[in-house]
Length: 205
Image 1 (tube, rainbow, N blue to C red):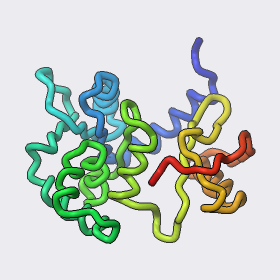
Image 2: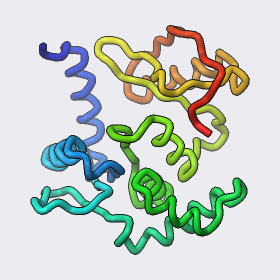
Image 3: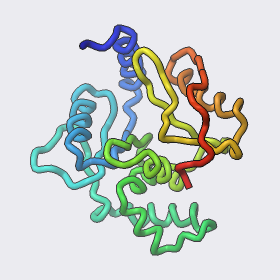
């Protein structure tokens, strides 16, 4: 069944906004066949400059960059950056070096260091692992204490059930404010509704 016209128009608008920006987007799950195929298409259509974390395959993909953390000269710098950001939480130099070689952390640290403009993960890893790496390596926007995630679906949008915020961490109004701001950044009108009770636990530690 073809997607509805609203979904086609929404994606076309996002692509039109992204293409002239030439953003460098890093994909930590660069060994996954679906990610490789998607990166090849993104490069062919000139939507973003894809960077895949993993070993370069035998068949080259024009416009796609592959980086192996084990052989990258920047890994040591990323480990130092992670240590500075996490030492107050008890992370040691050795632990930072080990984490920096993990694809999720490596990709997030590329963004933190300014070597990439964004990171897209979650095709293989869990939401909790993906968000945890981003929070540890990049952190939220200054002044923001809450994080949330969402699905964009046709023709409706719903909060991502993989991200559960504890009621002790925020008020109901602030939760909806965080969720409601996201679609406006994508050029969508914001209409937020509570669909389920918030569970008293968080998946991000």
